[in-house]
Length: 330
Image (cartoon, rainbow, N blue to C red; front, side, top):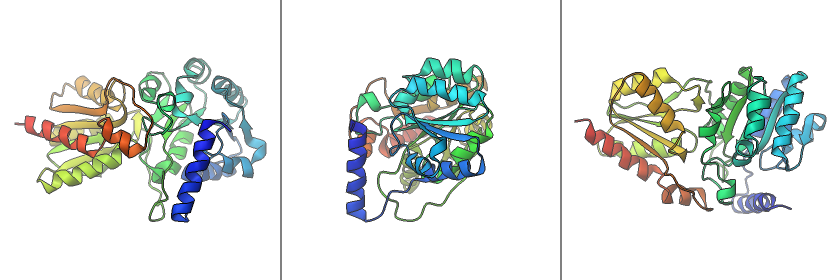
């Protein structure tokens, strides 16, 4: 049993023992439901069935499930052949392995021929106990640079079904980064919708705008609540679609609030913050602007809350950036 499998087994047992409730597998359920409707959908995994929630697919549709072993580059090659034969492959592993280990294969065998290969990564950004080797802090930067490739970063399990739908709606390659819940939610998950190329205005305020993606959306909303207590009203945009980015919404919020903070579970270089800055620059909009994300450095293994706090990705860091840009508005 490899390190990832040992960790997964320990975490599952620990949570069930403490809560007596299973952790929901919203992505796995959504993929299986989609596959039952569309016989072209197949699932591939690089020996990570349970951590990527594809064990559900394996047990229900074994003839359309392929465990290729720890061979991510080969997995993309297999998916390319399947896509050319008329199938829609969803390939699964951790974000770090899904991108850096097979970047050339993704470029030449998925994106260049514009094939409907859906690359699904888990453990986004710093959010893993397994340390630098498993942390994907540059995956958005490198993947959004590939032509034809859509990049999605949904904020939570309530958007996982929409992520599957958005991936299927795009007739070409997609990369999405997902995070499984670490604890069972207090209430049932209520599915919410998002679409490729459209941001979600999760909170409206006139003093500044926080544009966040993935795990940083929860932190951004918490920051907005604390700012509101001090009389600063912040809009929060959930930018689940990083490429294509909702440029119209970015420009609208810039004009409406006059200050922007971006927040992401990723390096500040080349990710969401860079994408938003590019939109503003191209539109000729100058305004107080700050990026919250991992500085130009590596992190370490640890719990997600600990790492978000230590490396300046949490709500406290967002509040500091928000106060700074708000103060510069004049």
